Length: 621
Image 1 (cartoon, rainbow, N blue to C red):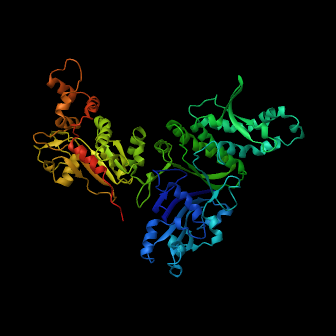
Image 2 (cartoon, one colour; image 1 turned 30 degrees about the horizontal axis):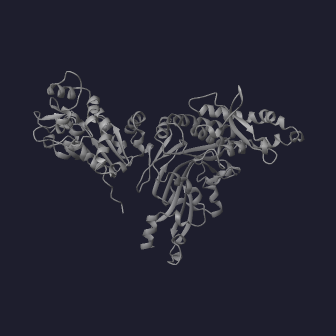
Image 3 (cartoon, rainbow, N blue to C red; image 1 turned 180 degrees about the horizontal axis):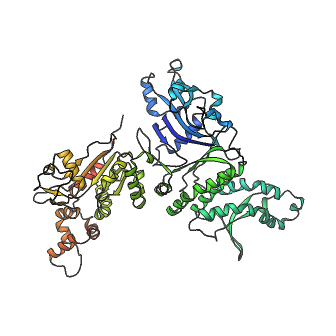
């Protein structure tokens, strides 16, 4: 049996105005804070309630209802399941007599005119409706769901001490982020004890134990320690670097063993019998990994193996907490094979969801073929990586895996060309922030694209950025041949080797001969709200700098002449030649030496680009 949640559409629920998501077997949901990542999974619980909670209604809808209660809108959740070979207990999901299919479930609250009363809270104006039907012809073939049957169509959140898989139902097991991994009901000690308590109780039930305290440690070692073996092996497998010395041992708290036997976890060294380093003294990242693994093992230990597979969703929230970036990548690399192995042994079908704020987790997920869902601000809250243009997305993925994964979390992007820009653009942003602090408050990411912006363009515009600035060089050369972008230009005209300038000059300016540098908007070819603008060197009074280095030198000549760049270069001409003909990286590093000077000038096209990208966005309302 196979059952997967393939699509989820949420409307007007909490902060999600119109969230549309596609899922696969293994998923990573990323995004900055407050974009609705966790809200996706909280919806399972809230939409099973009989009454709509006021805090569950999107505030924009409440404001509209306050002005006009007849607004034709709803608070709704739609889930599409894909299934194969359903077991008898799950036949309620079958919408066609077939071995496979897709079933849609819709739960919504609509305003009921008979319930509207200004004397009552607005959440009481809504009436609940529930429907199920085939995904392809849902509106024509849907049937009403009885309230008592809703548990068969929505996953139920599984808590720590109960059977997670009641017959005919399916659950969602949630490992929430632990801020304090050493204490509390989900802390390391408590979660370990839940798994070992049955063995511990049986160990301490004999009459001889009360009169033989000195033997208790030996009994624990013989009977409890073997149960720790799997936990320790898994922890070594996940920990990086793998360290056989960091083996955790179960130690009995002897002083209170008669009242409430508990186990503490510690690292011991055989040659130092009195030495003990508790788990709470280990690094937080190590503790967090242990915490996740032992809670997963608690889940699997409660599942009775069965020949009939039963579905379970698993949500792991913020596995990156306290952990080194490289350890985060190891975790993503190992977690799927670990869960698949345990699920196979127990005869359950598991769909995995990892919720994260980490660029390392996101990039590792792409590398491991996870389905990546990106939470964004705005009306349409989510972007599926799998829905992007395949060719462009593959190229962008390779770029992000080797440069800057933070691009996935940004609202705006600055795409730039070369090494000098890579070093200087962050410094320019900070310098401009002295006059406009709002610049650093923006969620702006820098992305190196060289002269290959077109390769990434389709993917970038569909990732939901509000603005993308392309900073590039004019790069004029003499025309010997014509490109597809300059067929209408006279052969004798000077042309540029920059493909983006050739393209935009033809499309927006009717020819390169009308191009004077500065800013040029991209034509809206993609039907997305993303605004693209190219920025390149401006034509000055008597020169037209073709690179960033020449543009900087043109407006900061005296400052560059003051730089000490080596012995034997007292001649200003030689010094200038050395600056401009050396490596771009060296020039950028020399520029950092004079950047803080009060009369240092940022080239106009760079300043315009950074000012434009940092402008506040207008509200949709």
